[in-house]
Length: 435
Image 1 (cartoon, helix red, strand yellow):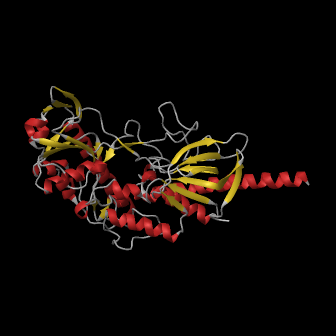
Image 2 (cartoon, rainbow, N blue to C red):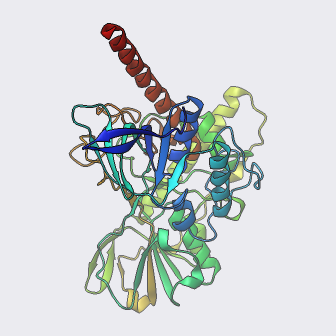
Image 3 (cartoon, one colour):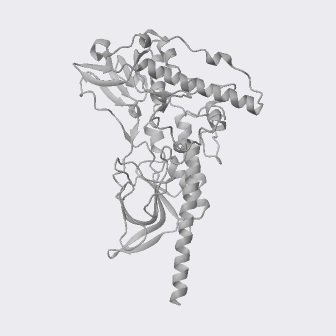
């Protein structure tokens, strides 16, 4: 029976036993819980902090979702406080998941950290050590996602005159020390933070690496729609060499197409990728124009494919030739800066929008390759009963998005149910043989 408490004896004591343990109470864990509940599979969610903690404490104050409300959601559940074509705020997303957890009666225990998962010896399943003791699980789903440990490149030494923070610790311009700000990273976080700092009157330097920058809207449709109808969300794997290229897109200000040249026109100084720290200054790669051009090529390729799709399908969507007009390259692109002295430029804060790394130290299982990456097939590992959920490109390009993790969770719930049916047959067959 769902959520019933069962006990098993281990080492002379009774230990709680659950069919499936979900580690992580974010979007992946809640999606997994919904599908397991629908299948009638006993499960628990353990979350070390609060429900959807990343959306609460690792986002800046003005953040909005990068996709519109009609798209960035679980398919059966809509936003109560956001129009379909609007972009949910950080707080709206938190309320959305809180409401969803209540709706499905998610069996979540917050404030419980999972410290170690090991295979049981001579018995199926896993022993799980937590901050509140041990428990046994037949199956374990690592639903901790890919955004666990902020990455801060160790390029600069610690300095009293320059504060270095990760984008997850950024809240608003007034929380930073007075002075200029260097933002490192051309993804959604870096671009939005740089834009907000400019609006607050700050002097901004923005380091830009390789990126894709799709149109926010084109011919009356959001880019989420275009990537869907063009089949790009369902791509099974990234093009080799592009696995780590970020998407520069924003829902801020009602959603506009990102173009870093427009930031430069408003006063931002664009830079190439940060390379090293030498003689009290940052050295920068000479790749800025190349990275801007590659972003343009990606942008124009989406327009080309969209136009071809409209023609092939006979759709009556308005033409938008002005979308192909690109601003001229600013001086910081044509004459790039290769050395940046923070003291001379008055830079008092560096915001590293440089992404995250996984933290899998609690998984004591042979489920990683030599580089430490999860080994799996659509989330299913070679260790019976252990699964990953919420990984980028887990089954498709959209796997790490809210709607994408919903579909991956459904697949894993099916796999868990199939294995449960095999165990039920084994138990029944063993009972018949004993009789």
